[in-house]
Image 1 (cartoon, rainbow, N blue to C red):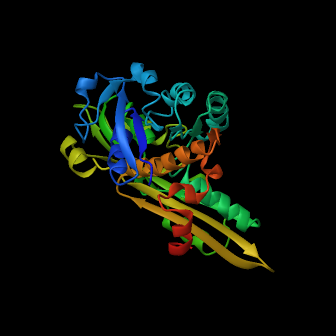
Image 2: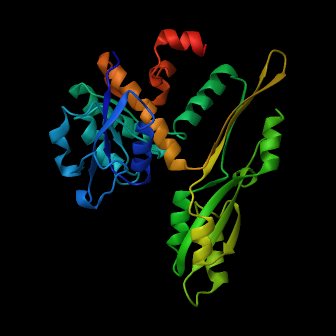
Image 3: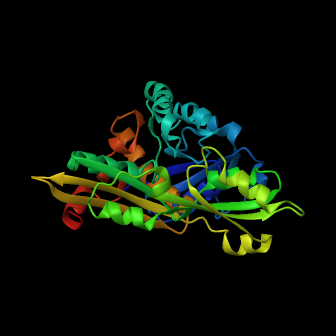
Length: 328
């Protein structure tokens, strides 16, 4: 008889809601509680039968939860919550500040391992599924180059940066791969591409009354770290257009490994995603890895892990025998 994995959610924004949807698609999982820093009475779940608790009370539920999925942000929430909660629960999170992953891994491992917990960090599509495909590419085609393209998709961080410019009432920013660059990579010619050659950026901006459009446009296109290295288009629109045409959160991209085998034979490996909802897809990846966290812990394999450490079979509800029969 299959055990039902009891899952908790820490944080209930776009990602937390996506996790609730995703758990509903897995017969071997049950959502047993949501934890929030807001007043629990103000949080409306999809399923009213699932209790909502204060985040401050979470330590009282260690026996009731098999895996806790952390749905906080990487900038402020997870650096604190990740290590603290991995001391109490098996956890899965989507920490995505690439440069800080080694330090974050160390901090989580230092609390999870001594307490017999398993914590899978940086789960999602990048870092996550794209990371795995970069690894496959390098391992299989050691002579070559890896290219990652993002989009077309809405960038939450870049959109927020535009919204912080004085005079901007609302904004979204899309990252778009340059088709010619993608074609050159797919050709196997191993091109050297600059940042500007790989992606363009499109901004759709709603201004407050009486604000100078040219001033805001210049503030956007010259913004260091965000737009100055890219060809950036700025389009001014109404609040109604922003709500009507830009409220979805699509994203996606490609990982391409281009390499040579034998005496210069061209080989190209490609993995791509096209997502209508970035947070819902990321949530779905988190839930699959929650199953792996539970299974690893049941087998006594504790401490921090990344997607590189997880065998693919651990993600599936099917038995090893069924996987060999149906998918191999």
